[in-house]
Image (cartoon, rainbow, N blue to C red; front, side, top):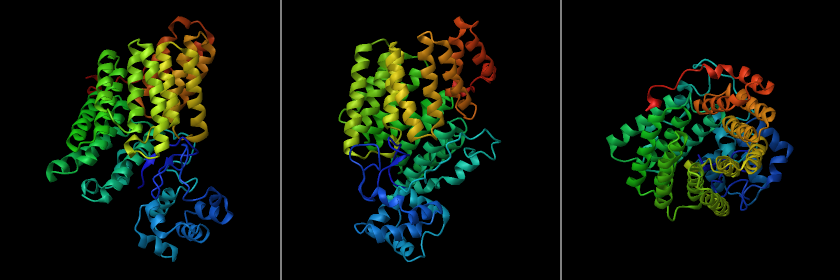
Length: 449
């Protein structure tokens, strides 16, 4: 699977496997396939039918600069596969055809095109159940091979898990992903190589654990990612995992420890890629704001924006930084301004993030719910109880379809903030609607450590 970055453009923005540039959202975008080709009636029909053979024939016939080698790089397959497809013999398997169309950037072929949140179902039926997740991920053995296929397999794992997390939250993902990561770790220990895969995978598992409320698991996996990054000399990964640990401490209210970790992450990441620097400054700004250092937090926000602009100009970053996009930048700025008590600025940034989500990534339900809880807090801090409860109500409706203890906690926190307005009609209405969260089970024993 090709490198992947969540979109600051129309859909999830993948990096072109041929030129390495993002397909949308930044200043220097891929121009390998002209946009007009996807508006051709014959092409629209072929994409809708997931007919990769016809799509490839049309591209070869109408875009003369596209070689079979370039198409193979985009699709993540061998040139011979493209040649067979062009001749009407290859890419007949539906899953491989869809993967090829995704690699080409064909519109409407994202992993979850349905913009409606999935309803919670029995574990055996939900897309994020342990059985479904493990059945669709590459075999752990493929991640530790000493060839290019291992990198493609790792990118595929991260892209699939990120997509599931975006749509459904980390609650149902943590258990199967932890088992998967444990299997990879055992293989690395047995064969003596494969740390390059274990590091990013451990960081992703740590993040999923954070969203699932598994605090001990989050710390363990993120610490493992730091170790793996040191072993492989990947400074960006080391600093990134440290910044996740900082965010973890921020969520736990241990602000001084969060700040120390964020500073260590930035120092460790001296000379980091612009994409990694974007995330490091974002986490530092969050910790500085929580500790009341508003001037320093403002500087870090500006550094975050500057690094993101530079990352966009460079055009490519590793798949484990796939969450960084314009939506993330505005949401992080909004969170920082909220902690600084700058509620107008917080609402402006959060409003931009929510508008971008609706326009460009409507499937990212967990993010939308999270940003709405922040916006609700900002409105409440301004004394606008009615608007705050309306916004929080929208967040709660989304949360009902998610498996994200972290979002549930944010809504519980908002319920507690409503205490001074207990006699207000809007407050009473929201408290009544969200009453299931008032009696939800406490976090697991592991998460309490």
